[in-house]
Image 1 (cartoon, rainbow, N blue to C red):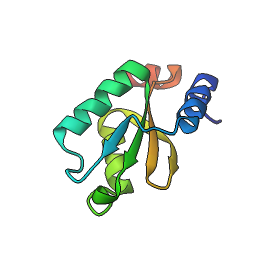
Image 2 (tube, one colour):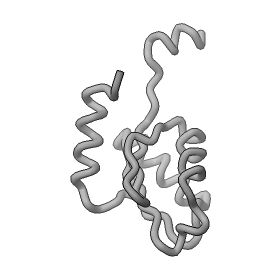
Image 3 (cartoon, rainbow, N blue to C red):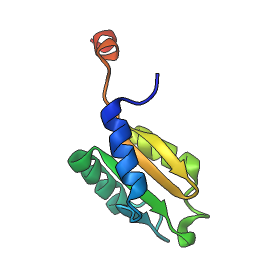
Image 4 (cartoon, rainbow, N blue to C red):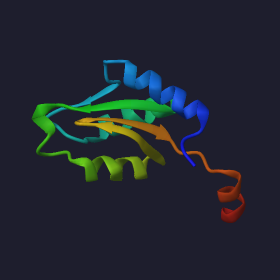
Length: 99
């Protein structure tokens, strides 16, 4: 089973949009950037993140995966140094199992 339809539509829009919502620079994943990503996820349910050249030695894919996990989000697309994160929603099955 793939992504839900509404999430596929959001992904398509974000991929087509050339500008990233959040750029990660030489300071890496500092608290201000993490808070901005959290804020964007709350507002839009999806955020496009780009890792600039100055941060590529500091921030790798594992760091982005850990960030997504800590923000209760999933990586729905990655192309080079650009990632699209979406808020994770529990399915009905997961909700009933966690209760």
